[in-house]
Length: 536
Ligand code: ACM
Image (cartoon, rainbow, N blue to C red; front, side):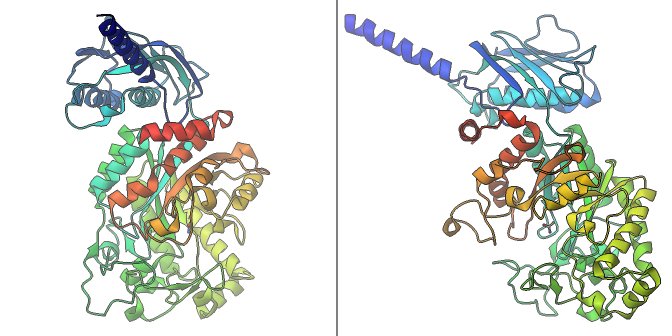
């Protein structure tokens, strides 16, 4: 009997120990202030949520309903007013200045939870943190038995460090469907990213329907399916079927923009010019400075640029738009008109990176342009192009954003700069009082290998999680006032499907999310790595 009582007590002790440890707080990105209190909130079999039922709140309420019922078997009721509510979502009547436009406060008590914020976005982020407090099983898609559905009692105050918290998704090198893009948005929003930089055009595919130029997607969206290490493929035979790829119709784009908006994600479309433009040139060869329409084919992974001499690369086939051709500016004007009408966010990204100059050097039209405009070198030719493009973009009511090469030869007057070749471009642009988004490749290129090279599909560089975690968006020497935030970039030359995409993105984008959301002094690798394991 004594032994039995002892065994019972031991069991009880173990149960309590489990119950207590069940409630470790593992939120990513790390909130500004977290006070864990004793005890746990236990999810009842019937949950009542009190919340304003506005359009902006729809996604948050749907998200909470789905997460709190699917695996738990609980039922849910959502009301405008419910004094006995289990969970209350409250928009502050008097703004709480500390938490700003995207912050929230989350108070978890044994039988009630309150999330308060100044805005619907703040409540959305509070809901994300709440679900991260729950057992991992809550992420399932079917009923799960034998789980204590509890969350640790806590008081959390949280708000972002930066307004620009981005992920770039390259859908040109490999096409990803509308549904896959929506999945990408769902996942990024879970970690409080708010910008999807959508890389829509490149040498390998033009992915956005432009009604004034139908060949951009009739021709430009399709290449020849090849497998293996992209960039080393043999050129396809002339008659090989060009049926690999795809594009988004304007209706698709509107649907994705609305989907993102409901999750408080803004989309920055990128039309990458004047380099990286082979898909556009294969569709409309007259946009190049170099005659020979028959030469131009959307790239299928064959070598088209020689990097052995460093940057800028030497193009083996002219993949650049011609800055000396007025038709190019007419083209860009029409493209930007349609792009601006589809994307409500302030910025259009115009690329500007890795533009080869060797075909421009040979062009008589470029020589004439240089003489007329007093341009001394090819950097100034690109700068002339960028300034004209800035005028076009601004005429559509949008802000002009480009990769840091747009600094070379003189920055356009109002350009914002995305610093990717390390931090130098961002430091320089911020000191010139231009807005900057930091995305230095040594810390934020999540297409690089992340593990030992023998275990990874080969890519030319490596970025370990620890290094990704060291990303500091305000580098030494920068004017912090102009650093709007940062982002990680997912180029997809070597990424052929969504499962591989997820493998590359996570957990390194957790590190980015913490660099752009959390306070610098709250970052701690040991704490982060424990939380990453919990997120797995
Ligand atoms: C880039 O990685 N070429 C911006």
